[in-house]
Image 1 (cartoon, one colour):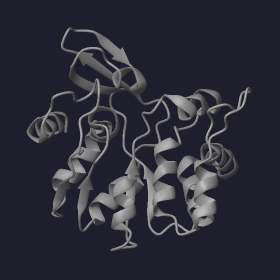
Image 2: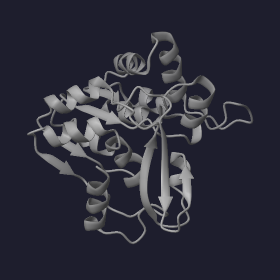
Image 3: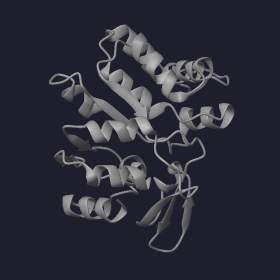
Image 4: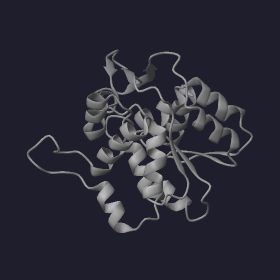
Length: 227
């Protein structure tokens, strides 16, 4: 989302493709309660691309801090949940939210499969299930994968890749935000087939648990091995 704030200065023809493997916090609770894709990453991208002004951004980002079931929920996540039910789909809900926020560009989920789960194996052989568990593994990660196997990408995401003049990958959590998109085989194949230049934007700092002690070369090697 930080990258999008800069890119929108140069182009309105932007499509942000976001992972749907998140299972923590407000997004994870809505995913479990409403059987919908996690809205958090998409919300951040919508806010970044918004031209609606600071008040609307502030409201979308507002998080309840009350002693009730609302505690920890983001107002933007709740609105996306309402639009998901009202419009009958996550992509349709995101498009409606984009109108509310005067978004320059598009935000699309990488897949319409709401059952996607991220799994990881540590160097000690421990299997972690769920994005939040993988991101807090006590040992370095050996590999990650998604279930169910054979899950397919959202056609809107594939079409955006086919039409792209530039494909920008990252920055973000390597194992839990960037790589999960490429564990869908048709996403990797579409990026490989594209003649557009590809840019990998590495994080400016490592993350505890995920990438401790890793340099740019290690980030790239792990990304390439999984994609």
